[in-house]
Amino acid sequence: MQAQILVILILGGTYFYGFLQPRMDVKKCVVTAGNVEVQSVFPRPVIVVPAKIHNPTKRAVKIDEVDFRVFLQDSYMGEGKIPAMVVKPGETREEKIPLKIPSWELLIPKIMSYLENDAMDARVEGNINCRTFMGIIKVPFVSRQTIKLKE
Image (cartoon, rainbow, N blue to C red; front, side, top):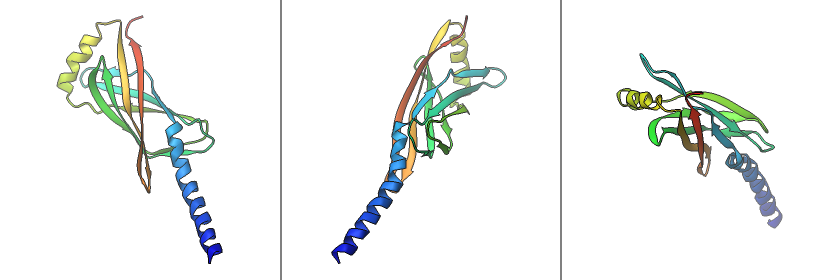
């Protein structure tokens, strides 16, 4: 009887470790954002965020979603989501994500005022989300850069 319980515990532990460990590797992934691209202002503003997700581990990592918010000069510009993906060991995936802008009318004057500067600070912050049977693992990240507007 004790041998059967021991076998069940070993098999259960092995299954639990095998299922959970790859998900825990998501905490080692690194998200960075490239320069926020203002692709057009008129007639409709189009802003794109190039994002890179790097997996430094020796196992593939399944990411269910990456959600992020973009700030220019500490002003909220919009948000976006990167859909589910698998990042192979040592791989860096790059995605170009269009922003969801809350109000175009409020955004246009901000963009126009920034275009008068030589550079502006950009910040992208968010979470890498990974679902497990024990809940959602959220790994926060912040990426900062200075965008040069004039050479």
